[in-house]
Image 1 (cartoon, rainbow, N blue to C red):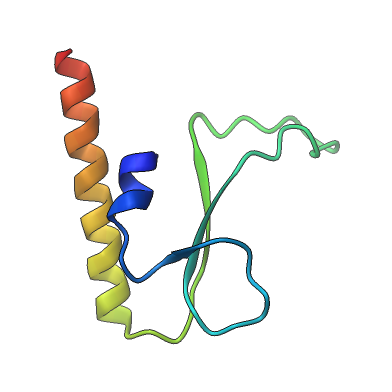
Image 2 (tube, helix red, strand yellow):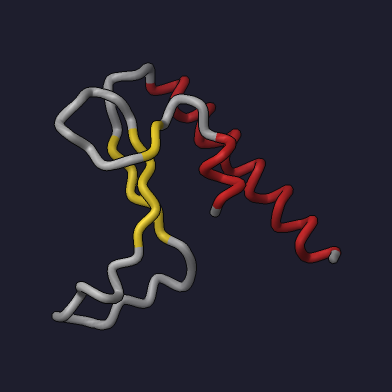
Length: 78
C-alpha cells in the first residue's frame, strides 16, 4: 500500500476538511466496526475525489497501481 500511496502526485494524504482537493486516506475500521465483521482481504484506502481533471486523476491512480505492482513483484521475488 505504501508504494501505491507514495506514487500518487495529485491525491493528497489526510482527512478532508471540506476542501476541493482529491485525497487518499489509508484506514482500518476493524476496531470501530460493530454491526458486521470487517474483512476486506487487504489494505483499504478511502478516496475523496476533488475538482481536478478526471483524466489526470485516472493517470495518477494508474501510476499508483503500477508502483504497487512493481513493489509486489519485487517482494514476491525476494
